[in-house]
Length: 459
Ligand SMILES: [Zn+2]
Image (cartoon, rainbow, N blue to C red; front, side):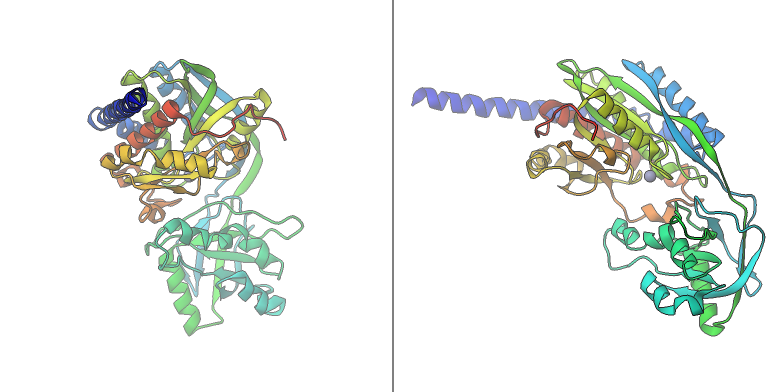
């Protein structure tokens, strides 16, 4: 009996000791990111020295060089480039639209074809694909279709509101073209009523005529809707000259600290290096890029020796193809790598609230067991949910996919628009995000997340 009690008290004091050690290490990570952090200056440099960096553009190439040089300057164990083929779409120098002679603020959607000169046609407003189908070919043929379904204000998560609208942007052109439409206007995917249109990717269904598709600013979408209420047969015009070129070669940029106990087992984490070609890609996803670099840096500067290999991956081409994420997973499978977990920061540089996980219930429980260690940093979301676009291709074979969750109320104010610039990122919020990311990586490195993790295999 005595020896059982002794054993129990030993276990308790060992776990108290471990808790204390973890608290101290997490404190060190936050101090390093908050007191002498590099995230904010790195973001400034990415935004101002490189700028917007759509896949295939000279700026995206510059971003690869920028990231490689920066990672090399930190003297991590390895830095290398992973080749990725990327699409090459270029916005034209003409982007004009208007109604009844009044011009509107637009952005051509990524992937859209040119209008091949000015299109003039009657414009007809709809809110969803059912409404469009009900109107039918007779009413749609020869017209410009205006998709005007806005964010649902009742939804607390702006990501949910975005998810409820994004099919208009992605598939609106083909749905309208099936009924003979000649062009598409889509209300920008944002709560914010201003005059900046928000771009984003769109696609064409095979075998359907490709018609041009552009986003209208929220202000102009509301203006157009008012005009149509008063004058239902209003004539709109649209003139854009975007182009698609052959695919180009680009890269994922990768840096590692080699694991001291299990060098062959990997914790991968990152954000995406490419951005849309407007603004500076500051929140999307410059923040995720500098969060990831900073996480690796502060883990190293605090003197922590990771057990597993920590791999920071700056993915190319999340925005219009996800070829960086797909290539990364394909290479990991080819090599039969073992991944302990994959984490992504691609939800902006706002104040961090916690983490969501796409994993097993046991893995989620394990992550939730660390809540008390992270609660002092005001991290309180530890629940099942989205990991990230770039890490999604790793799904399967029990790899937990984890997304950093910053506050999302202002994210879509700037998303894919001219206002996604450095000045709209708050230094302290950005730094807290980097530290939170580092803390989660540390805890996963120390305790793992469980799951029967085997070498990845090709399907
Ligand atoms: Zn993004």
